[in-house]
Amino acid sequence: MDIKKDLANAADSVGDAAKNVRDGVREESHKAQAEGERQRRAETGDTMTTGQKVESVGNEAKNEVQAGIDRAKRDVRSDK
Image 1 (tube, one colour):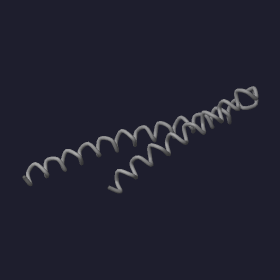
Image 2 (cartoon, rainbow, N blue to C red):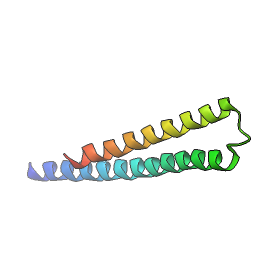
Image 3 (spheres, rainbow, N blue to C red):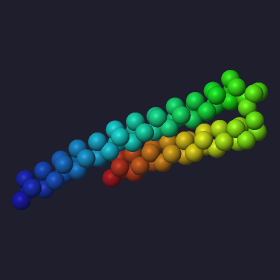
Image 4 (tube, helix red, strand yellow):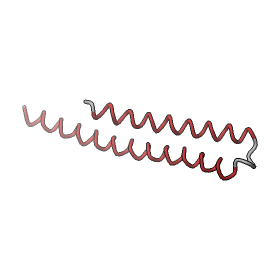
C-alpha cells in the first residue's frame, strides 16, 4: 500500500513541477509584454493618440495582473 501512496505523491510532485514551469514561463511572458508596452509609449508616445495611450496603459496593466496571477499560482503550489 505504501508503494501506491509513494507513486501517487511522486506523480503529484512531477505534475506540480510541470505546472510551476508553465506558470513561470507565462509570468515572464506577461512581464515582457508589459515592458514592451512601456517601451512603446516611451518611444512613440509623442505621436500616439490619447486613445492609443489609454489602450497601451490598459494592456500593460492587464499583463501585470496576469503575471501576478501566474506567480500566485506557483506560490500556492509551493505552500502545499
